[in-house]
Length: 330
Image (cartoon, rainbow, N blue to C red; front, side, top):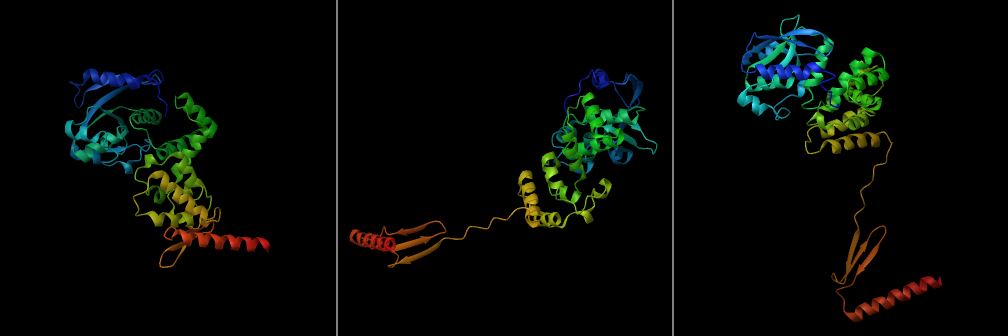
């Protein structure tokens, strides 16, 4: 996503400056008022969730595009050491939910880092609408861009909401995310890939939209309605299922190499490309106790007579000359 300016979403920068100005005094229960990008004024309340309660008393909003199942020590290695040592320094943003726990819009990676490091979770809570929650989620994901799969989930919701790819493209461009309908479509295809295939990749950020589009083409038995394809292992094509099983325990391939293997495997089984046979081993023979060595391939016939004496070499040359002359006469 392209950078969204603070002029477009003025509250994002203002909230951060407001927090920075009060950082030393901001405690659980403190409040301050801020005007959002849409002109609505809201009251933020500082909440500090004890470390042991973070997992149970907070949950990440389904509006947030970040894949929560992929958040672990490896994917959080850019912020986890700091939070483990110093705790949170940047407050998360969310809202109270009707079911009790706090719903997190911005701060899902910090949330998981607090869970892993047993640190308190700091979050600013306000009465935010779904659209406002989504905007804070998008802003929060600027630090580490979501993968094509994660973007695709958000794009899919947006297309459904607005009714067409064109309207989704226009909306995203207006909001500062310069993205084409082609890219939107590729990302949506990435989001449709079954987890069985996605889980073959070490990091979903390595799975680009181009790779996902290539995989998508060979992943399904039938092109059923969109919801029927997502995560439905029963609808994975037998070729892709077989290809996936052959590499399920192979962690040596990089993302592009793995994608090429899976796609080529499916193409070969479908008869779309011919598998290149291995080149036959050259035929080798020796004569005269190894003094004459012959190597015969499909395109070349080589005789090594370097071990012979000069007289022997001359005799062989005369013999070859005679044989060629006889062949010419025929």
